[in-house]
Each structure stands twice: as structure tokens, then as C-alpha cells.
Length: 272
Ligand SMILES: C[S@@+](CC[C@H](N)C(=O)[O-])C[C@H]1O[C@@H](n2cnc3c(N)ncnc32)[C@H](O)[C@@H]1O
Image (cartoon, rainbow, N blue to C red):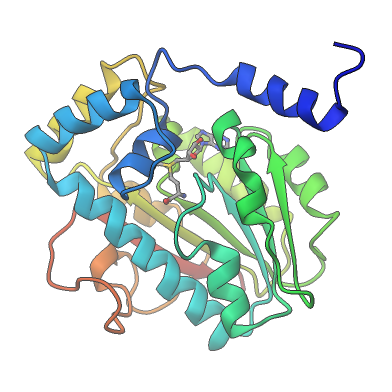
């Protein structure tokens, strides 16, 4: 392999890390939002879950609309220019940097994910405006110090940052651990920073059945939590109106469905 072009070799190494024998949440979620970057194993469990609980498609789609509204609000009304998006997922329409830089072309965005499929497609996340900047970190939410250290190469961590963890905290089942990780990340960000969270909730029998089916598929399990646990993630922060609500009810602006009841809650909180 010594005469192989280094870029091709890097790409082959990333591809070799992709496990197509088990579903992966990035690819499964991509299938739910209508993407093409998924494998048979993801589509099989995806189709089964669509059959037993079609409401999960609404969760995936309306959560992306929430991302858009939250980022527009923060970049527009709150003047935030830096975003740290952990558990980015596969690129799709209206990624964080596209939404933010439409409002503020100088916005800087750091994406973080630990799935090799996201790394393989990361170039689509690096299409920054000339005034702004985007970066991708192949890193782990469970290692907040490394995430912050590497993010500091692109973001000025003495200035406010919006920390976004959307539809990802279910991978951290233990509540105390999730709180610890969020607090470690927020501790590295200055006053005036924001925490943005959305996640699936154990608010219907259908969602609980979907989660059980997903977790028995061999995928890394995904815990759907009670709403109270999502509320508790914002302890110590100033909650932006309207607080922790269903993702369709957070500052609706006509983009995306508003009247759908979804098993996903969200919130935005400001660090004083
Ligand atoms: C369900 S997807 C959500 C994607 C996107 N945030 C969205 O809301 O559309 C969850 C993402 O979290 C990523 N993820 C899971 N565990 C992670 C970890 N420990 N560190 C970083 N990313 C992780 C997965 O690879 C996947 O891309």
C-alpha cells in the first residue's frame, strides 16, 4: 500500500471502519429523513419501525425543523456566531452551518461525530462561506475535554458558543452521566453561551415499542427518556421561551409542521 495516494489511503481506512452488519444511528436517522447514505441493515430495522411506529419519521423530520428555528433564533436575535454541534449525523438539507451562515455569513461551526460514515461524508459539512469557517471532528461526546480542546482550534472559546446536542443524548442512557457530560462541555464555554437539546421521549407506547425494537437490532442502544430528564439538563441555565416543549411547539415560524404531536422535546438555555 506504500505507493497509494495518502488521500485515497485515508478514505480506504475510513471505509474499512464502517460496520454494515449492524444498524448505526447516523445511517438509520438518515434513512428516516429520506437520505441515501444507509445500508440494507439500517433500512430493514427502519422499515420495521416505520410499520410499528410511523411517528418516528415525524420525530426525525420535525427535529430538523427545530434545528433550523433554533439556529436562526440564536444567530439572528441573539447574535451568536459560534456553534458546536455534537452528534451531527450525516449531512442533509439545511445543516447547521448553512442555516447559521445564511443569517450570519461570518458564523463558525464545529461538527462532532464518532461514526466513520459521517466522517466519510464530512466534506459536505465543510462548505463554509469565505467569511465564516467550518470544521469536522471525528471525536466522542464521552470525551468532552478532547472535544473542547480540538474545537478551540476553530472557535474562540472566550466568546459565546451555542452547544447543540440534537437527538443524540439517548446514546447516554444514564441520566447522571448525561448531566456530567453536558456540564463538562458548558463549563468550557463562557457566559452568554447557549445549550440546545432535542431528543426522543418515552411519551407514547409507540415510541417505547420503537425504541425496544431498535435496541434489540444489535445497534448501539438508544434510550428514550422522560421529559423531566430533558428539563433537568437545563438546570442552572436561563430557559429561552417557551421552555422545554415538543419540538413542533418551539417558536413556530411557519417552517415545518406545527400541529403534529411528536414524541420529541427540546429546549434552549442560556448560561448567565
Ligand atoms: C440520531 S443521530 C442525530 C443526528 C442529528 N443531530 C439530527 O438530529 O438529525 C445521532 C448521532 O449521534 C452520533 N453519536 C452517537 N454517539 C456519539 C458519541 N459518543 N460521540 C459523538 N457522536 C455520537 C451518531 O453517530 C449519530 O450521527
